[in-house]
Amino acid sequence: MYRGRLWTMRQYAGFGTAAESNARYRYLLAQGVSGLSVAFDLPTQMGYDSDHPLAQGEVGKVGVAIDSIEDMAALFDTIPLGAVSTSMTINATAVILLALYVAVARRQHVAPASLNGTIQNDILKEYVARGTYIYPPRASLRIVTDLFAYCARELPNWNTISISGYHIREAGSTAIQEVGFTFAHAVAYVQAAVDAGLDVNTFGQRVSFFFNAHNDFLEEIAKFRAARRLWAHIMRDRFGATNPRAQQLRFHTQTAGSTLTAQQPHNNIVRVSLQALAAVLGGTQSLHCNGFDEALGLPTEESARLALRTQQVIAGETGVINTVDPVAGSFAIEARTDDIERGAREILDRIDRLGGTLTAIETGVIQRQIQESAYRAQVAVDSGESVVVGVNRFTDAAERGAGATVPVFRVDPDMEREQAARLGALRAKRDAGAWQRALDAVRDAARSDANIVGPIVAAVEAYATVGEIADTLRGVFGEYTETATL
Image (cartoon, rainbow, N blue to C red; front, side):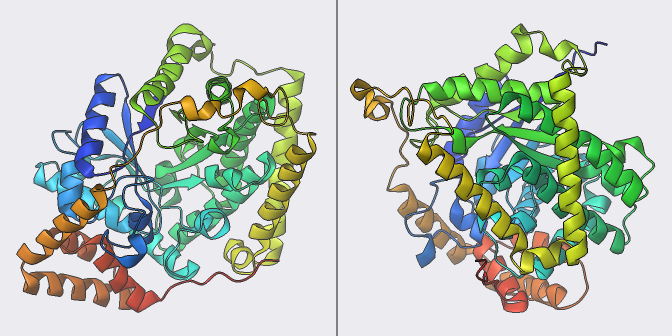
């Protein structure tokens, strides 16, 4: 059976200032990327402005620094938002970054209803895997569902959540745990949407996922196939979805950064290629390939281009996209698919018996299981049971320090000071009265049961910053402190 299947090819290129990132995005679009992926720096993820004391040394380092509508406008300068698909990797401050995107679209005279893209907006995995949360879990889930409802009305073509197994796997989970815990989070989100009055057959079409492509080639293919099958059953049998598109697992895949090594870094080209091929054979609809210099620093122009070419070679030269499910019928693949689906179901059943996903997170159950798997994986590497070429096997004394000869991208250290200066100039020129009224409206909405997204859009248009809006919400919801999980 043939269909000429293709996926959306994406590459992350945002770090440093918005203007610098804009130049990289325009270059990638010219090179054939069909969708932009935006990652934000750590202060932006945590709801701090670039001049906050806790932001010192982190501005622009792991993504692009966004403080205000002026930064978001610079990021997408000359990029027509009505004609591109944008994926934003952001969670605790997702509602603010989407508000900025909507506000910039309005500046471009693009109607929000015509915007197409995805916002990660998956806060639950932050509590179990990444740690870039701000508010307590239940308050965070309220913000997530407010964004669901707003987009259902205003951005009908926008994917309102990308539920991430990627970071769960990067934190050390097994393939089965990646599927099981990701779907446990997904069940909580869908249930929250249903409880908020959203139609599962409509809302379910805007749910997307974000998975990891790890090293075990056959296991990864089977993992994606098992996830596709299991999600269809969950949506049909648990939530009563009858629309086939609401039952469909729509997912993005990124190759596994945690598998890439600083030693013999060119080996990473092989790892990324095989991981990407596994994702394609497993049915991914969107793909990002990591640069081979991932373990050394931010991607250089050369490594980003090579990562994109890896996708293009798979799509254009291998022929694997011509068949719907090219590995179907293989005993090894089918048996592993069944095993992974069965194991993920067992995880979901255990979490249900505990009282649901939020309870499992608040009591540290999910965190403990990921930590235990990560420990076992590291012991296997340290003992040599698990082979890592160039690290614990096939090393060469002459190659030691070879990673140092690979060019590494460095963010200009003056960038942080310049970003803070731009932020100070914005605060000096804005209308203080309009700014304060807008933040007051955000606070009032958060204290009530009103949807907070509209007031946040108005606040960013009044030049309120990411940090100021996040602080306003901190004043209402408080901040989450992780409890010990051992």
